[in-house]
Length: 234
Image: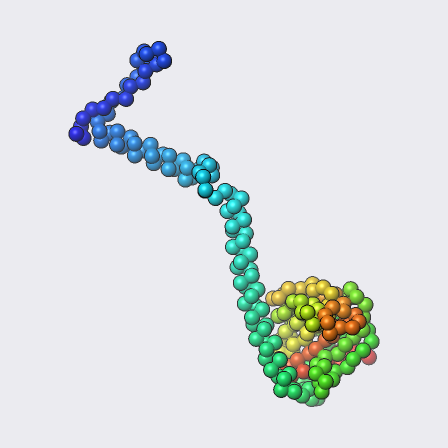
């Protein structure tokens, strides 16, 4: 059976003999295997594979890879936000316990005048922890640049219904500075900034705001500090 001869004959249109291929059964099987392997390679490693119904196109693969990268970025951002949420929860728990302001004298790294004023303007409301006002309000115009009071890392940068666009910086000495009611944020979570870098644009966004101003808070170890005791404000 395996050695039985089979012929493949080519005959011209006029019925004339053209050529003949004579192989045993095993030979035809090898030839068929080689042909099928060639077809598989042709459709697996050449652009012909995109002609197969249901096979993903190049543009589809590119969009798929872009979506995967976006998902990874969102996962990383989500992880950073969860860390910030835990820190804010800690602050909230301290606030609910009616925290007292950190008393002077301040630590050497928190001495008055060593921090940059985030924006020029009049103080419209001072630090009043007894009334749950944990920071200072500085009147300003919409769109004015907000400066980082010192070097640090952005640990929060999001929109809040109550306080507009909010950005928070973690400083090397443990100090946390929070800037609220902004109209636009110019930094992202994870970015490092230097003292005096522009981090946001002022505004009056948020239901807690009645006029354009910056609300700035400074915290240390879960306790609020009067920003005016740190800033070089006259």
